[in-house]
Image (tube, rainbow, N blue to C red):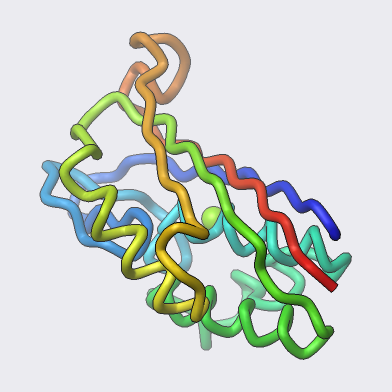
Length: 156
Ligand code: MG
């Protein structure tokens, strides 16, 4: 078995859609990034790639490449899943935590789990998504941005 860890941060910006865990969430602002800035998916990609010692999301999908400008991060996750499978690994489980002050994420958790499990061809009970505020502390608490953490376990 191999463990992997991923962490990502994106800042809030006006005039952007808020994408988290593959779901578009209604909010007054969204996250800024070269792609759709889905911080949850990016943390999961990094955890998967880390577990397989395949570098990180920037190695495979560089933000200097115009091909990835505005790209739907769901495509990046599906591609990452293929890289993992090509190395002979299968996903045992994934656990994630989103640190976000607003909006409330609870209503979208099941949709995220469903979407993410479909993209990786795993069961819903193999992926956990949790959200926490930071009690108004730090950049997440000041509503300046969102961070996400992910751990994965791969079987070889
Ligand atoms: Mg990112």
